[in-house]
Length: 138
Image (tube, rainbow, N blue to C red; front, top):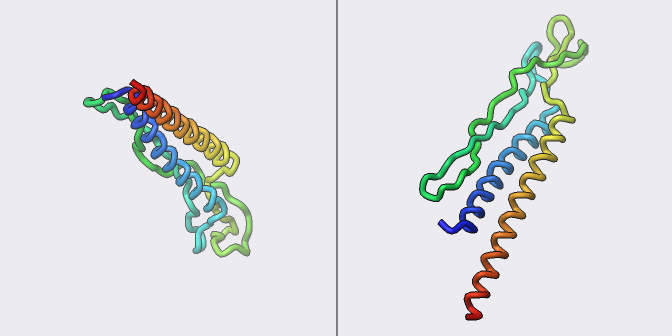
């Protein structure tokens, strides 16, 4: 396979993976305050994304893929609020295990990775176009 075409394929797999990561982080941020609906019930549980490398034997390229979208098993923080609908018999409410600062850092990192992969595709497209122009000139 042509190295430029291969680089576009690898970058496209990175775009797809980072797009999914951005979606998961956005879901975490949207539910950062989502508590349970009934007394003592669990709130929203943070989701995490795991990546894996997949080697394509035909092209020799190492593509990235989503291995799994899991839930974070860390403890839920609790807050004393006996008036809340999800408060247990002692007046404590379980809050989501979502840390907004961590999610924002993940969002920034995923966004930058997405942009880097997009730039690889743009550069490869430009190189392919330049090659075609050179071939026409002959």
